[in-house]
Image (cartoon, rainbow, N blue to C red):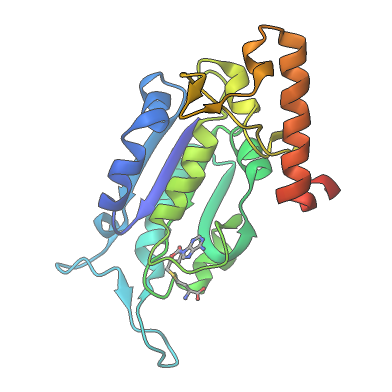
Amino acid sequence: MRIDILTVVPELLESPLGHSIVKRSQNKGFVEIHTHNIRDYAKGSYRQVDDYPFGGEAGMVLMIEPIYTLIERLKSERSYDEIIYMSPDGERFNQKTANHLSTFENLIILCGHYKGVDHRIREHLITKEISIGDYVLSGGELAAAVVIDTIARVVPGVISDETSALSDSFQDNLLAPPVYTRPAEFNGWRVPDVLLSGNPKEIDKWKEEQAFERTKQLRPDLLDE
Ligand code: SAH
């Protein structure tokens, strides 16, 4: 799949997209990520991308023209499944949305900044709005990084042990069971015996029970869904 990110602060995306599984997803050719600086599409020697809001509120607003030019250019090159705007008032992001987005060919993700973007962009160009939670970030870049990381790790083939991503929390509306590694005993704290038993059936049963118990205790709302 291909993801085009539109931002006025591309530097904010360099590290989150340049390491670990997101980097591997690109190196292996499963995910192609292109970061575009909105400023490159702005006019005039100042390359102005923001302006004062009509109606005289505090803060600046990202202007429609450079973003429109950039989105139209991208759309003329290929068709996009969704043009997403990161926004605190968007649909709350979750694993189900990530799984769904990971099946698409081409996505655009627009990151806002300052007070946000000229609302006409949202009315006429955006097809989906995503929030990563009920709090306000300075820009959409970190939110976009969260979304892309979540998508990349469920694209088939990205994580070599395919079952690994599927056994994470929120797949099947269950939290993940606890995990342990060597040493089997530390400070007198022992790993549950069943995990050392070598009995795969018993181990699977234990994991399922733990997943269910933890969900019931910590996130009973997931069991209602
Ligand atoms: N004035 C806006 C907030 C602007 S914050 C409001 O009150 O709704 C600046 C930018 O950060 C937004 O345009 C958006 O792209 C991004 N952003 C902030 N919080 C976010 C969140 N919780 N989820 C996704 N994007 C967010």
